[in-house]
Image (cartoon, rainbow, N blue to C red; front, side):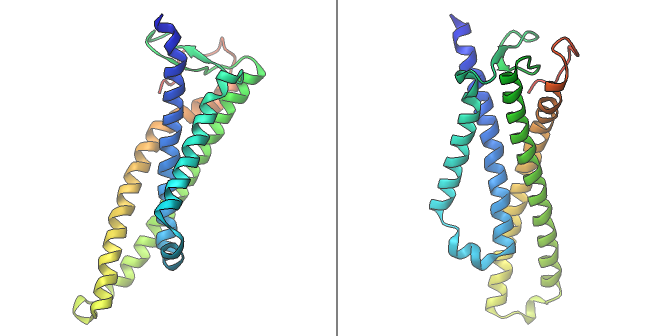
Length: 196
């Protein structure tokens, strides 16, 4: 009776694992927009837009994780731990390969965009900090002090997003590397692989 629930457990693990990375990636892009184009960001970035983007990304990840229920790929009982189910690391059929590569492409895209976004944010923050350090606090008017305070808030948010991104990268990089390489390795190949 417990085996019936294993595919559902694998579905939720895959879906929410991908969607958490997608949300972190969107947060990284949000920080780039906020720092690179602050006036555009202030006009167009609304809570409704943020909720819509998060909902879309979550639905996309749910759809991607649901592919095995429609015959594209499969979830498989983990033989080493005998306690959970996961997507098939070593696909044999074309549909299993498509599923594995779809997850791999999603992971590579999220990792690449997150890395580029956070690098861009780091460069922007360093530039702004240099400009602000050139002006002494006593030389600033109230508008300048407000700008410095706003920058400090942006800097804290950028640090938080960078930390969340690093956690995402460390957790998803092994899964992504394994998903990218596994379709090209026979199912009787290596017996050890990365379990996420």
